[in-house]
Length: 166
Image 1 (tube, rainbow, N blue to C red):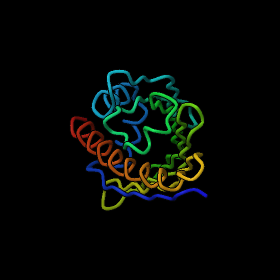
Image 2 (cartoon, rainbow, N blue to C red):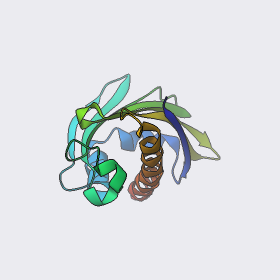
Image 3 (cartoon, rainbow, N blue to C red):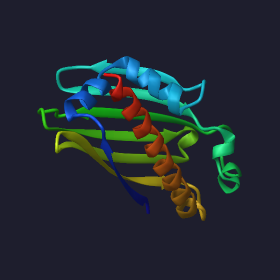
């Protein structure tokens, strides 16, 4: 059984500015530099008429991993994330994301919607975390959700800094 999560944030810019930022490869390099480690990489970036697709590899620092989780990891925690952002109509857009931990130990699946409210963007994210470790999966899933909440805050702070300069 998976553990569900939700998060919402107000972004200090119009939805169109957010969507344009997500479609700028420089934004993703800035995000990795601001929120990630020096080992993180932008693996794929594609913008089409239908969608923006971004794949990154993130290396989670050992100090960010609780002891209980470190004991079951098959080495360094490396996560491959794919985001697909689409459906921009001037007032809203949607996203779908997956994140897979190396070795098949866990997976995150989620969706998001950004809408215009009073001229600014508001984004809601929801999804689920599944950790495939017998007896500890549920406990580890809760730790992952806690980490995700902190990560979302950091990523939205970076997004707000980015759009403030646009």
